[in-house]
Length: 297
Image (cartoon, rainbow, N blue to C red; front, side, top):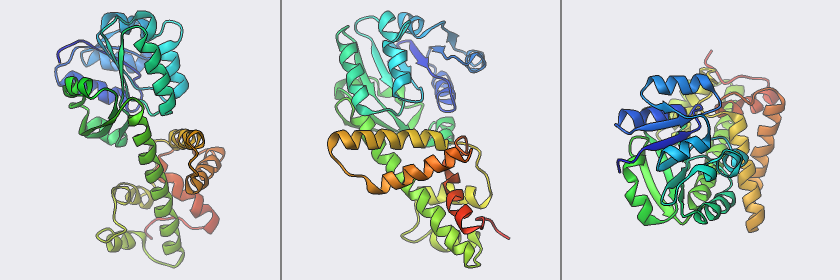
């Protein structure tokens, strides 16, 4: 697929994803409210647009990477949005992490104008976005997914078709629940170990090769031990994802008691001024109560 691509949303994730598309030889038109981010991607070879509508008018495939459901609805359905400029036969790929029921709603509106949509949220955080190794969960028509697979390749390594429109979002919610609960478990358990007088680095080396080992443990335990909470994925964004999970679960009649508990921990951390920190800082909730820090002496 050599069609011109539009890219809306150049935040922590979107900016490196757009740059990887440029490195792969794709022609890009980009838009974001952050002019500095736009200028940075333009310097890398993209053209800039004045609005989401402008992006849609000048491209055939429009990728969206913004924070949440309201932003996606504004970008697509709002004033000067994609729907106002998009041409029949175009494709919208929403790679944001939003409520999958909203994805289905937006897809229905686009379909009225002869425009297809894929929902394709990602996992892997900023490191995965920079390295082009994201996990990408794609929902929509399988034929369209196969046709535009090469668009996903520069951004991810584990690219999986998961079902009809909305399925990508549902899969991402499953992912975010597991990641949040896993980080909380690591933080709680390491707090116990440190309170007992153990060195957290030694704990890490002792358990990483056993059943407690996981991608979360490998990525987040060193950040906790090193007191490095620079955001790869912010607490406030994970809070948003768990809110979407709980809202969706309510609509589907699924109880999520553990997710509800961790969501309240995230609320507490946001109130404590830690919403901009990496989600590895979930550990600080347990540290504060136990009056210890997970760090080597």
